[in-house]
Every structure is written in C-alpha cells, then in structure tokens.
Length: 305
Image 1 (cartoon, rainbow, N blue to C red):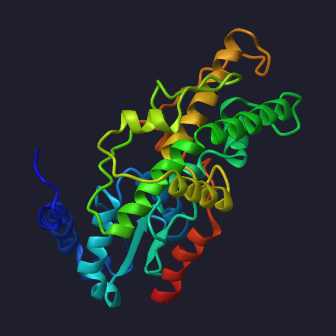
Image 2 (image 1 turned 120 degrees about the vertical axis):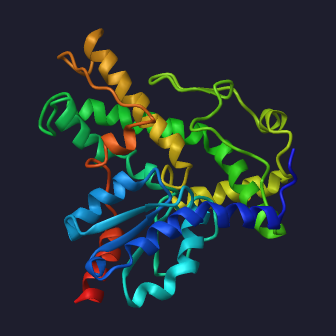
C-alpha cells in the first residue's frame, strides 16, 4: 500500500486538475467574457446548473473538478483571471473548517444533498410526482410521518456522524493527511436498518471502532464535543448529506410501495422511482435554493455590469 504523504497528494491533485486547467485556458476567449465559468466538485453540477440558468440563461460553462480539493486548487491557480472572466467556484461545507473566501460559494448545510431532504422539497415531490396538493387529505399525514421518521433517523445516526466529525477535527488539529476512513453513501447495514416506521440502530461506539480499525484515534470527549457542535448547528442539515439523501430516497420508495399495497397514505398507484445515482439530477428542481446561493450568483451580474 502506497504511503500517503504531502508530496504524493500534491502530485495527485496537480495531475487531476491538469485536464480542467487545459479546458479552462481553451475557453479563455473574447466570446466567453460574458459567460459564467462554473467550477464544481462534479456530482453537484446538475443542482447548480439549474440555478445558474435562472440568472445567466445559457451563458455559462461547466468545469468538473471531481472533488472539493480540486475546486480550491483551481481557484488558487486561476483566481487572478477573475478581472477578465466571471469565475464561480462551488464547494460543500462537509465537516471541514468554514470557508472564509467570498470568491468561493460554500453550502450552508453539510452538502447539497441536505438541500433535498426537507419538508419543502418533499412537498414539491408530492405535488408533482404523487399528485398530492397541500390541501389534500393525504398531505398532512404524510408530512407528519416524514418529520417524525426524519427526526428519528437523524438522532439514530448522530453518534456515527459525531464520531466522523471528531475524526475530521482531529485531522485538522494535528495536520494529518487523512482520517484513514472512507465512508459509503449510507450507514453500514450492520449498523442501522432504515425501514420507514421502524428505523432500528444496532451500533455502539465500540462497534464503530471495531469496524474502522484504521481510523485515527479520538476520545469519547472529542466525540461528545462533536455531537454538541452538530446539535447546535441543527439536525439534519449538519449531518452528512449522502446519509440524508438516502433517507429521502427510502421515504419516497416507502410511499410508492404503500400506493400499491396498503394504501394508507397514497390511494392511487404511483410509479415513481429514483436512486442515489440519478437523484441529484432527477430531483434538482425540487431541492431548496438557499438565498445565499442566489446572492452569490447575482453578484456576478453586478460585476459584469
């Protein structure tokens, strides 16, 4: 296994943005000076593009950087060009230190996935995919179930999120290159059963440490401190976004299944399907748009005026 060092990380990052930089320089033409150059982590392009079009119509160019580090690297490499071109950079907050650079947009939530898992988004999904309006009898019972189950789920994954948050804080504090942990899009199956109406957790802190033996060491006090930080920021927006998107997908699947069998909540058969691969694109128009995002996009109109 190759040892992780600052040198080989830097080399990997430099190589990974080489193609993006080449594409950028090829687009640096007079005809593109009124277009917004958008640099994304990658998976979030469909969410942002939908909002960018509200301001710039078709006058924008997308550059996919693959991850947050590459977006920041691209900013450092080309930011002096912002006097010539409209350069926009978009990143997730994650569990990292807050971004203080106003040239880079950072989500107010953990990530854009959190902007999909909320009552406002569900209301739009119900109206457009399940044909249920806010005035219909089915609406309130469904929303009550969603709120109750989302609250239950958030509390049951809080320990896992707190542990991971404490790893990220320890990594920053000690200047480490990695937490030595790579997470999947959902809580491990042997930790939690995400069944709407009966969400069950099976894990403890000891079980987490047993599963992730290579993770950097953190104390129980550090984990408790992280828990308080996440609670103070508000659940579920402070929790890992991929976990929250997974909840929304499961909830929609539950409603579809209900429409075909018990019909407790949905009276007519509904054929609606989404999954983690297509959800960000499929549901982009329903997701919440933070005011700070529109402020960021509109700031480029003032710049170009």
